[in-house]
Image (cartoon, rainbow, N blue to C red; front, side):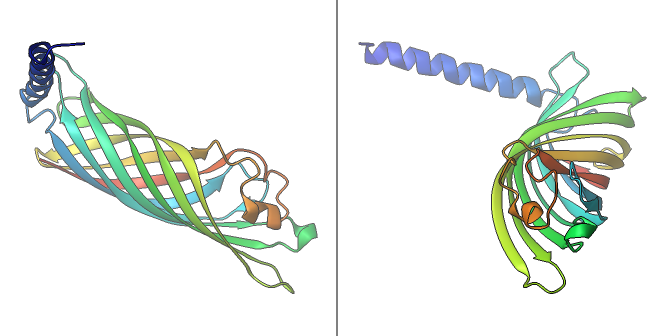
Length: 217
């Protein structure tokens, strides 16, 4: 069994290592990558991976990041947390009455983002990967039938890529493409099954095209 002195030494070393990592990030050049950002994004959204006809909806959300740049390196790294909302629309096959599916989703996720310079200090590329939960309310409407309301909660993974232009040290604008997949979708999407979607048992997701405004601090 470890002595109290040995445990104290181990705890001290762990604390010193953590403080060193934080200090290395904090020593980053703030003009190249601040330690926090808050980003608002919004734009059109559409379902992906379905046999039904996908309509055009909309979506948006907020992302908070914390991180920085390791001294002497170019990439800027952030841990991120996001909350997003979307509204998606689909129509089922004609031979089954062209059921209309309307989805309203709330996404909660965590991930990681990296920034790399493209042209000078102002134009940057970024990529982000993460995962979380999607809470969805779906309504299936078909002529001559009662409206079906369903609620689901599913795990999803997401990826985002885009460009960002640094207007000032504390404000950027940009654009991004964002995709999400639900790997546990198989056999769970009851709204698609009710509409007669032939791909209802396959992994599906959604795509968004986003305009972004980001505050750096």
